[in-house]
Length: 505
Image (cartoon, rainbow, N blue to C red; front, side):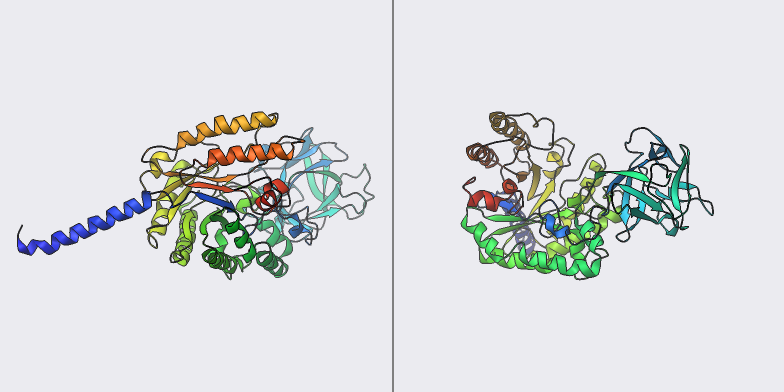
């Protein structure tokens, strides 16, 4: 070796050493298997976790995304967007399904836009009184007031922008030209019986339901009281070593996020990191709600159940910017364990190509700021549990998140106590083995719960069911996280389950 080549050789050796060290650090499992709890319902609202948050919203059963069906009392038929949208509204359906369902966009407590199956909005056709569903974006012509009967809230009339009410004149002629006066009788073609098909209680619903001015103190009070420092002390004292914290994309714009979202959740997340450091806990920051919603559910802050995330490059780029913000802000915290790039994207609305494109960019955004934090990639719902294994294997420090619930499927609706436990010991054990591959990504059971569809189960039954899951999910190479720490439904609350002796860690 020539002397003048020595510096170059030493530099190369140093670089190789750093790369090797990085690879080892990222590939190795955590120093101890992660036993975590999700802080669900805190920084991303889910009404079923804390329903009282919505109590102060006027007309709170008509929030954004509420799906309604309207049956004419005279025609005895349902309103329908013909062909699902793009043409006229009719009243000639004897039964109701997708084309006969209208989704609310709330403007205030009584005024709404009505979105149809094909995503167009109900409105008036030009200067006429003909009711159509052709607009892709709502405007003044697509703004309606829903007037409820004071004595029977299942009866409504729909006031159009021209000041007249919708009426089903014939099965194929729905117009907005009925006068104000009514006796709410069965002979009034402007009266409809409503059926509520679905309601959402997520972040969009609570913020737009209250309005920014009223939502701000409600949510800031919730953020400062629902999860507090004592909760982190409790977690650390009960055999857990980490928390998974769901956040929404608007947190990156705090303190002035785009309407209707309100600022303040970033301060709460800062507090969480401070408390985690104090009690020697690790933090997984989980992007639970992506722009446009990745699954159409309330926990992804969907406005009306639609799934728009990943359909455009701009949408993906915006999400990458959120990840970059979070990684940059918390990279220096000793408690940052991992960044989860997105929660539960739903196939086929989210394509594998768009998801992998995002994961590549999101991973790079995290690595800009930290070489040691794990990067978690969530499996798509309704897709193969193994579809990410080869892709994720190409990234140092990657983790694949799987969610295991003995719920939400007819498979579990008739299982007995023992059959549920056998399902964990056999089927879930096999599922976990399938996604645990040599030289592949680590595996994280990011959500599970000791709840099922069994009625009348005893405390001992729940204990056996919980222990079976602890035993099986304890074999996950990265670890697991219970959903969730607090919930008005006891078995969904790990705090309640521990305090009442259902789970011991």
